[in-house]
Length: 159
Image 1 (tube, rainbow, N blue to C red):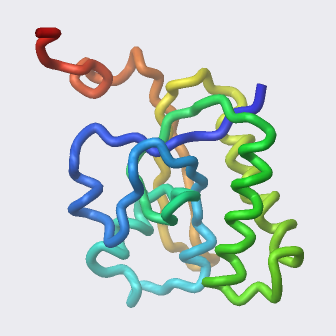
Image 2: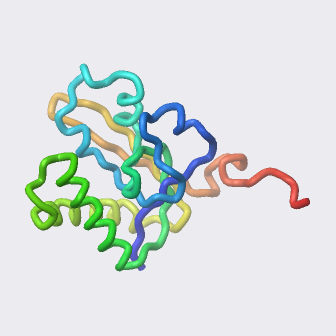
């Protein structure tokens, strides 16, 4: 069984903190490569929030605060790999999709590694900091049983 993670929203806060918020349910990767040449001068406003704890969605290339581990089909992984390679061509100057496929595969493989030891529905958060040697990422897993009830429960009436 292969696993990646999908963006998840508990409220509308991502709409307010990211310049391009991800929609709920999009496949995601850390996307730290976006910040590889950042300096302290880039750490302002919504960009700072994306840097500090934003996952990169692979549909709209927006950011999300939380992702949840989920099973994924092989065909979906291949489609996401191509989509990410196209993104590398469009935004980062990769010469063509074929040249970008290796890096796209590495990014998705890294996300699979992050998810492989976690059960589906485990929440993941990322934290980044800018150090003298570049961007350092750390990850934390939150089991649904560890989350506060209002984060995992849907409140309301069945009427």
